Length: 343
Image (tube, rainbow, N blue to C red; front, side, top):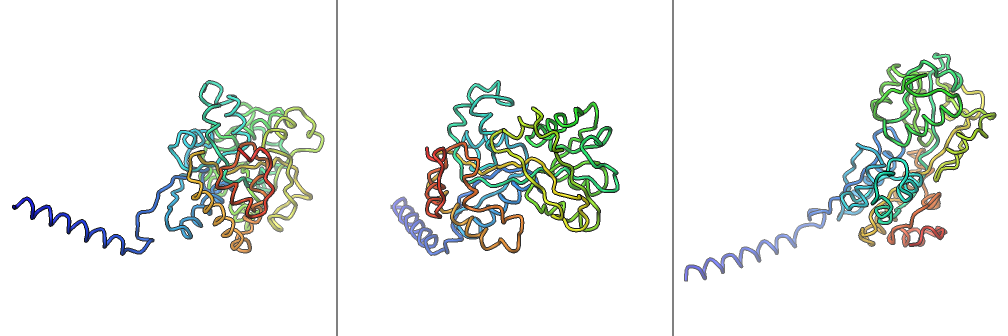
């Protein structure tokens, strides 16, 4: 008899709890927590993907994206392919290396199969490689970096490798031998350059970069580029022709009167993107993609660096299929989808 009463009390308690839960506002319900990995502060991927997370978290109450800004993209894509992370930054060049088991993936036999599990959500321009120096340094060309303290990018990352190869192709100078390649993360490097502890600061970013804009307010700066007579050098052409890369222009005056370049600067441009796993929920990715671009359209005037992020650019330099949810969203926005974007 006692047991029966306890069971009835348990049933009543469960019913009351269920009713209370149903009465809670939707926002108070448990959200689906999703991890998004990107590069560190001060980079375009960090700015774009943090904005993506903020817009989704504000507008879609069922989801909460937590941004992880540590580590390298080459590792992040493996975590997404394995289902350990929901989203990460990747790039057409990383996709190609992974699919073809080259460079950092050369000894990873499962890399091509893992690459097949990745799907693009959207691409966006990472921007152009800014190679910044202070005008007071007297450095006016890449040849002048001999003996200097140079930040190429975080060690082991794609930016480091790209700048190391570019400097060698243009000048013949080698990192660690002819100049000091300072090993820092993105955030620490920006602070170090601001403090005058770096002679050369490299950052692939949309212009105007918030970090460099802040520096140029009170300091005369100069941006180094690829000389016209070096554009046909094999090493330079090899970099320009990589998936997602090309030649870009950093216009004179982008950073105001304190930018001391006499004309436009020729440099490298690069496209990157947000990727997810093929098994990610279609409706979730669809809602996030549409919500993000709607939010970006509203923010365009207050965030100049976001003007380069748009639906048409979401398929630029694409070399993997779009996730089905992103495909549906972009088609509804009138974007012409290349064949490679369809699985």
